[in-house]
Length: 211
Image 1 (cartoon, rainbow, N blue to C red):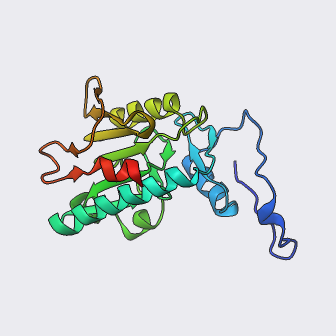
Image 2: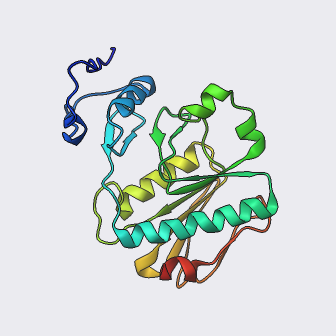
């Protein structure tokens, strides 16, 4: 299947404002998904392992502010320690199971990043990040809701993530997803230290909750 694109001579300036409409039974390969994203740059999409499109709703302003603080803290860690590449929520990764996902924040070791070709770095990087962090949005039962995020965390784990953090701001709690095994929940967390695979990485959760 090849996805057709609209000719430049027939493109309306209002086309970008039109909603993305695709049949529910549609299944895409990662290559086709990339074409859809190229033609719908305003849409926020992910690709499930079975080829289904997942439309991600924008976050509320409070969640966006918290996510900015999260990425800021990861950037500070990466610059101080060296050896890590930081990604925010607009960056997609092609996981080994064929899904394309965009964690709210993630870390990839520089050795793994530099092993990719320039073409792979420009597209959806074909790897699972070493650290993945998802931030639950309050009152959201959709793709950003807690049940969906837990499935996502399990998928990261199955695809090779070394560590996953699911942040629950409303509950001031964190679920820690190790490389294998069951997640561990920490209640009323104010600070979070990573495993020894990420030496020196600590999140000041109180600042994320307050953001």
